[in-house]
Image 1 (cartoon, rainbow, N blue to C red):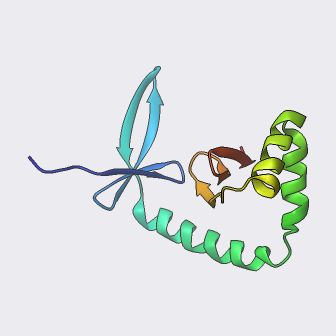
Image 2: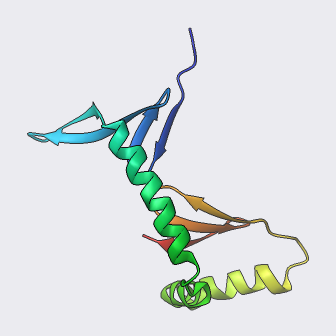
Length: 112
């Protein structure tokens, strides 16, 4: 029996390089094959747009806005983890249904 690897990216299910999308008809969910040419073209355009806009993005403003949307207690935990803890935390941007940043075991949502 061979291993089947599914990947979910940008709202699509990817199986062996083929894109599928989720549909719902009469309340019943289904998975249908998506137009790969459109998806790849949209992904290419989205990457180009992101690169062009990246230079104009105020990263600090986005992060401060998101940090202010979480509780004081969580900000305090995160501050202590980054500045007062003797343990080093790994910081990683994660992409899935939303974009967030994982700092040790703490997850800071960036985009919902």
